[in-house]
Length: 512
Image: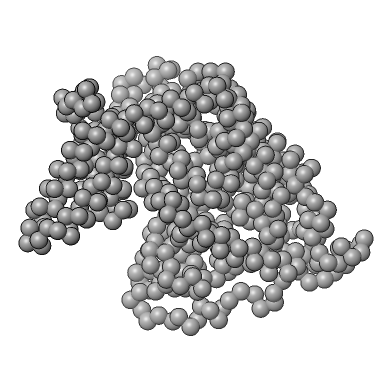
């Protein structure tokens, strides 16, 4: 009961700071973030939200995202939804939110941080290209599947361990069924979510995608060869469901309303199904195979170099939203091989971020505000939740974000090098990283070797991120501006050798 009260209190604290119930148009959550659609962005009180104890940070994208962390977000979201429903039944009070705006005493560092936030928001608005909007749709299709991927992945790992040890042989078949059942039907879930995201009837998308996994397709020949159940996988399901949406919308325009309930679903399944069986399954199967072959070839031949590039550029990809393009690739690899070889390498970006944050803690010994942020965000960072450190520390400071990428590059190179030697390191699910990825690791040379390589990569990432940031992450100007106590100002420190008390201008990192 106490936990429920705590979650409801968090939801109650957040709601008025986003403009109240009437300002919320949609509510969803992923692994770490509460994602809100808002009618009026100007009603949101960003600084007050960041001060809520359970809030790790905020991110503005196509939705307004409040970082709460894994576990917490799944418990707070239902309470938030209840409060929104209750609040919409009451009379709105729109005039209250703007008057409670941020701090009456503007601080230099806060003004710079606000300018940086405005610049980032303007960049995101400018970069809302059709391609990036499409990638967001793709992410919205696959993100709801992550909890099932994680659960089934951990069960698969446990089952593999028991099979290798020869323990509980009467239980392992049941565990195998639990681990494999979802993956055997993942195409149906992808089809359902795809139709929902693209504006069609979800169940029709699922029905068309189900054709791909139906055992009877083994009796059908296309392009001179027999089809196999599951051929085309999630990519085929994605294409089939998108096609179903367009066929359905075409039918809605031309089929008379009196016949719509009979004709539209029939034509949607019939036309989309025929195209899926005699075209999409074969094409998507070839593309899926090519993705798997290329990933294996890249790490077998590129090794350390490929890992260096993947680990080093993943944080910028996240900042640009381009990492969403990798979600179907991860899922395809898991469907084909049982694990994705890319995720453990990309997870090294988080290790570099942690190392950079620790170095920042030591380089700014007199800035208690930033040090407090780092101390509170580091546990989440070790578990793979990087938003608090990215948006609260490294990105606003500028250089530490770059040196964090350097740490990720070295960690990725370490894991990639062992892949080149033949020691494959993979993850049976997507979503977690950092220490949270250990239960999901799998490979081709035993669990012990896989864990050791991944742990070594994390250690290299931590160390490289720390050293790069400690020695190259701060210019003299940056140190003069931020290595001050709460009673000092950057201007005072720059003007005199000994610091003197002044207003609190270095409480928050500025955008540089």
